[in-house]
Length: 134
Image (cartoon, rainbow, N blue to C red; front, side, top):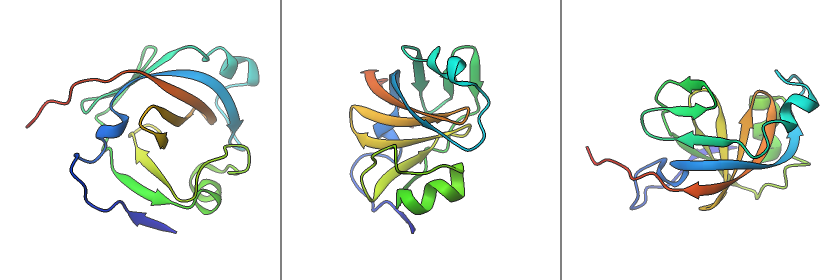
């Protein structure tokens, strides 16, 4: 089941804007672009999300849509990420945010689960990035 997030005061996607540190390797999709060792090397690295781009290391993605949806993890993950929700311990439902080159699940305002190169990482907020008003 996938539904749109009901309207609320803050602009869509603002909750994920900021710098996030990968703190824990949670699980992987059926197919990954990194082996276990490569994924573990990403722990401690900073992932930056802004309205203009998503940046991780030397990789920059186009401006993210930051579209939000409420999803049921056990249905969403097999279809969209070829993965099981079992080891991620996500709430049901949970907000998933489209980042252009990947997705992020919002645990709360200070923690995300970020899917990167086929791996799921727990990420904690380092700092917020001010959002420019249009």
